[in-house]
Image 1 (tube, one colour):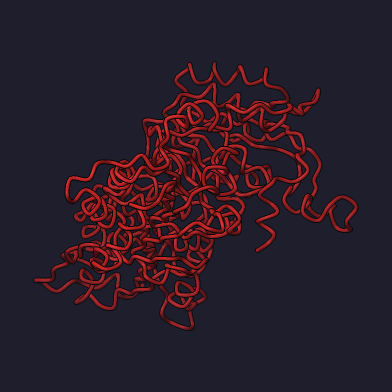
Image 2 (spheres, rainbow, N blue to C red):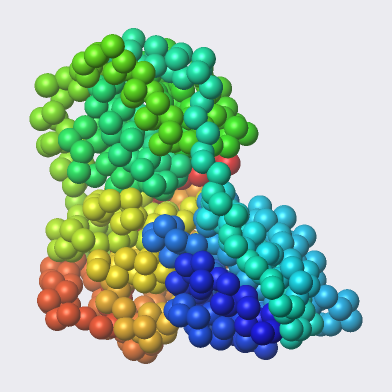
Length: 547
């Protein structure tokens, strides 16, 4: 067996089910080996799109996904998507060919680039170590939730494996429980708090963590919030207060700001989640639980840091609170709060002054009407841009696998590819891609991919014919704004040219066609070119440009 065959077999034998990429001469053979082993390969139109599809698939399935790349230029084309995945700690295995001859046009320092963007660089060094190298890479992805770039030199791929080589994935090491003393202090803070709030981040999406945190919340009387990347985790819980940070509703802001104890589970407590710290009350005690000790206190000081697994810490704290037969505490879960959460928590429950005109629709009206039309079983993937708050606030999702938020690198143009990867990871749901006009045009090449795959994808383009973040940040009359404003384009016609259905939306009445499309059991995307009113600059921009 040759090395490239063995790589594909090793990965599929260890559970890899999906790979994405653009095939060139350098990755042709190991891509085919993946397919021969039973993995699905999705051919993208650009490596950048393939990287983002793979990232989204891994996030929304809980599996390790593979990104297959040609050496050199294929790899560099994918770097923005790889960076987003690495910064988000996505379990993504980047399997890339490598030119190790400096005379080759394709030669670059691929491991150095991986290190520079925060990924883990590894290499298949020889036929003798090939399977162990692959197994090690897979283990780091799955167990440490890291993005790994595994370089496979061209000359090594064609060599024959020696007999008796094994590629077993090392056994997972159990996540640690916090030390007894800080755990006891945590239990004491919980038992004394009158208004505890839990904010659960990406670390709360690990197996068993959500349920363990719910149990602790029930015992401590805590309200349950999430960061944006874990939105939907507590969707069906009566004591959920949805998202903390820039997308928080007024009621959520009120409740978090009045908390006397805030516990961050696998959550960075960065400027987005805390509104530059203003969301947390000055007298609130802050506890941070994280598997990465370097993450504790990175963005703000905390009163207590606990190094340990999220699920393990929550279970241990629950056991301590229940010791001696202690009953669940009421805490923040006061009876009078229940009706307020049921009737005034969601943005869709709050009135607004509709600013729609004769030829443009208010993005709030657009989003709220879509929320009514779409089935509950949906996925929402959001690109970056001035518009992004509207789908993030007004489009509800059924759980944490319903919201794909690729904003760790804040790159415009990832939304469409994210939606494709999400649709493949959650095939039983209606996939929605929420994009600005800039991001739609940046990622346009993957519209053909969505058509080719027969995806019933709803693409909503919040079209204000500008890079709105820059226009609103620098303000009217600033020299140079003509570089970020554009003539209005017929994006619906562009979509139809790619094989999609296309619809121009100027009013809520135009959205009736979405209901017809949904009822037709669609097998191709519908692109809505929604001509939106200008909001004068989204509220979150004031945070975004604070850097």
